Amino acid sequence: MQLTNRKKVVVKKEMSLVEQLYLPAIANGMTITFRHLFKKPATVRYPEVKREISGTYRGQHVLKRDENGAERCTACGLCAVACPAEAITMDAAERRKGDEHLYREEKYAAVYEINMLRCIFCGLCEEACPKEAIFLTDRIVPVSGNRKDMVYGKDKLVEDVNHPIDLSERQTPEVVEFKKDKTKYHNQTWKDRGNLLNENKHH
Image (cartoon, rainbow, N blue to C red; front, side, top):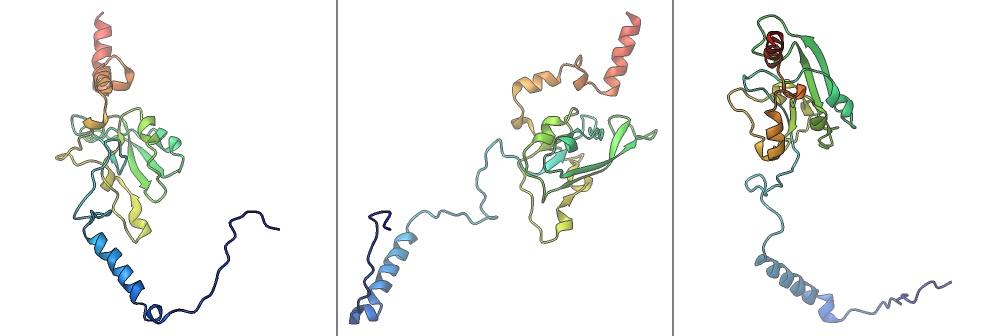
């Protein structure tokens, strides 16, 4: 039964002498090739040339430090719970006396790993973090032929003390202003809380 009128009868005719030499086909192909030589290429020579990426691009994660250089992450686990791909794992530990300059609060992540092969870069970990410790940056995750290399630990995630990563372009002025409000529990460090307690005692 015929469903449409698009049926086309294919005729197998004998090729002429010129067609048997393939000269018209070769000339046609060369014409198309030369025409593309003078067009702007659709691709770039990565990594020598890099495309400009969007300001909202979400790339490799970073674990931020506070203004004193201490790690912000307190291993609360909210990022791991929020992760739909279950790419984040961590082990919590308690801060020892004398390590106040290393870790912001009494609990910290002794082990923090993100499986980049599972991560879908949705940014939910960033939104779930109450300590503003984890952010997605504009850095592209390098490829690797080894699966173990794609499990990023703290050695690759925690930012360098001497070279902090600027994320100000990703933060709106409203968020920056909100962070300055130390009356919000979310923005307080242990030092801020101690100062507030002392002030309340005197009042």
